[in-house]
Image 1 (cartoon, rainbow, N blue to C red):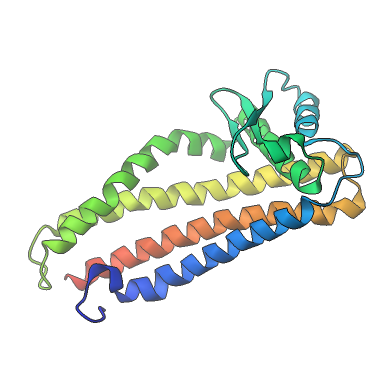
Image 2 (cartoon, rainbow, N blue to C red; image 1 turned 90 degrees about the horizontal axis):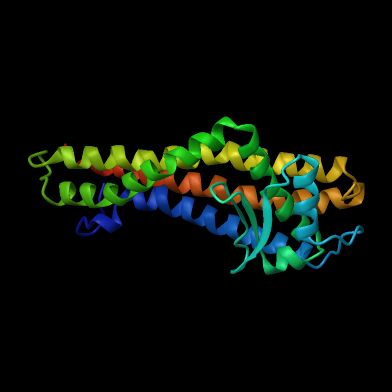
Length: 239
């Protein structure tokens, strides 16, 4: 189970679960950067900015009360359900590239989900404080239980069990995020195509940007699952 002195941070779960998932996450981030770098240089034929696309798609759905505004940061684009605002980073807000259009359309997809009461989005939004609470307690509880429990299972093993249970909440959050993000991208592609904002030749690049972004959520789920498996493996080693 353990290598060397058996230090918590150098167990077999780290080698076989967490490191591969971490490499996958790095690959996903690289795909996003590569896709964005490539298609941020490809201007759309309609020459619409991300802000104009977002406004057009929102108005088409009757979401006139949802504002589109500029926000700071790089690729910090998001939809704020409480403020009912689509916030776009400067390069997306002002840009006319396929990457800008794809990202702007994706965020309006979340606004559409919110307006329709899309189940997974509603569940995720309500689950956020629970997941945050669980995440903040999971590792401290598990680590305390791990340190004070002997190899014969003597000690507060229930703390490790609690840590695993709380960490499971973070995994649930990541799992629920997947259909939310994939659905938003599907809505984006459909809207951009049906409204003639992109043509057939632009579909490939737009979809590549959206797929690369979606891969990061798959990677985040894989990392959470790998970490949970590692905790379970460590817990069983104390029996």
